[in-house]
Length: 293
Ligand code: 2NL
Image 1 (cartoon, rainbow, N blue to C red):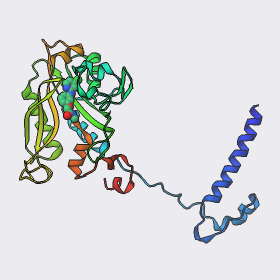
Image 2 (image 1 turned 135 degrees about the vertical axis):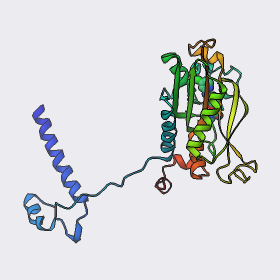
Image 3 (image 1 turned 90 degrees about the vertical axis):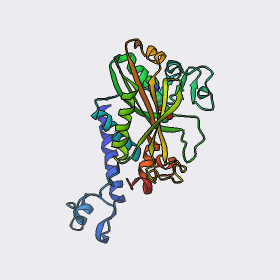
Image 4 (image 1 turned 180 degrees about the horizontal axis):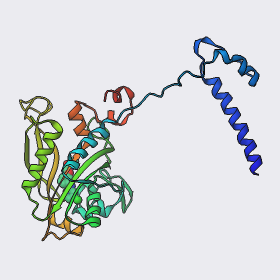
């Protein structure tokens, strides 16, 4: 059996080599004749085997990966660790543990991609944070970058798959001021020292109080333009103090610990940083787009 196999392998190798040789175009218009070793020796003077091989074109880091790494580096510098988790997630971790009520529209078939009645493609990276709270307890300083999925119709600002980065800090005496200061520091590191930040009230079921962070428009410097709808500000992420119920679901005592969290869309950050107007470009693999980064 082994001998027969070896014979077969030898035969296959010979065929492959010959076929490969036929495909490689010769330099300097040298013709190659089909034949055995004698013919190959005959052609040898024309075939310079010391010439370097064909180089494969080198790719580059995808802009979404690049922005994700930039965000990771800023938070690694602040002492956060990176956590990851499953993209196919239970309804419990994706919704229930995050205090998202049964009746919430985000649970709808038209917003969430269900695998079955108990399983979804995660709609955000928050479930990773619940799992991390369960696994490590407090104190906890983590960043959760990864893919998220929504049942959206694709257009220039929506994609079925996109990337999120969520951050979570849980410790004794964590305050809203810590959140404000950290996000201002982060936004200035990412967008540049000249931008200003503005925090305004919002609502999420998993944070209380909740906020939206806006930055002064990177296109007009806050003067007012089409991008910022003449307001001078662009909303960039949601945030807030972790809801006590959510800490409890993570196995953390809300009487002893408090925490803040935020979530942002990586494609949106990349679009703002590199002045890109269509989210679809990130996922089409067009080299003419990708080679610009
Ligand atoms: C948005 C809003 C947000 C969070 C994400 C979070 C996670 C846990 C507990 C509490 Cl485990 N909060 N994440 C908090 C506020 C906002 O994302 O608009 N993202 C694109």
